[in-house]
Image (cartoon, rainbow over all chains, first blue to last red; front, side, top):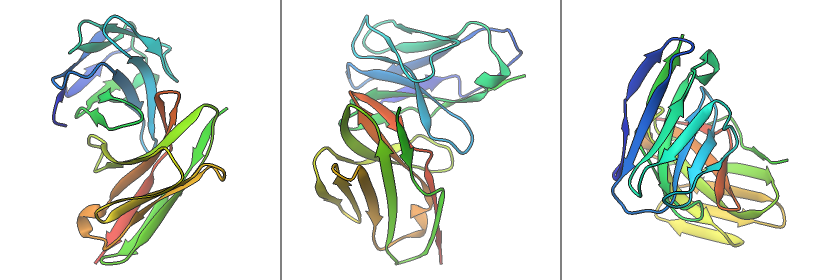
Length: 111
Length: 108
């Protein structure tokens, strides 16, 4: 987990509520990513940012927005949470062709 | 489309050797990575193969055959702490596409 922090660790939301998941890295990487992992599944890319000021959609972007605030921080926003967004969310930094470093995850339950 | 296939579960005994296979179908393939995840925690990087052949890192080795769209992770001298989920992931034009994972159980 070294170098990537995520807040909060756990969150319970009601359907329709909004929230922002925060991610920060201290390894000066240009590339950052948001993934979700559902039970018994692999990670699926939601959004990524190749550099400060740029973002792009991944496999499952619907229902989410992101902000690359600066080189260190990459946030994920759920505008109107749905039960289908119950998942574990991981932030990562690094390159797909090298080592990606993952944060500890945010466990989100939407009721 | 794109897809990766790996076995859902593998069981082995301490001290043994185990191989976890991964087959993939994708366009824009750049390479194959392997990640380990303990108990739903942060995945950790194990290896990356961009070219055909075997890469060795301590007890772990990873192999890639681009012509066969196939790779594997080989774990030697298994230890109890190797019990975890293992994911192969395709580097597709700079983005990782993960398989569903293989749960490895190491028995005494």
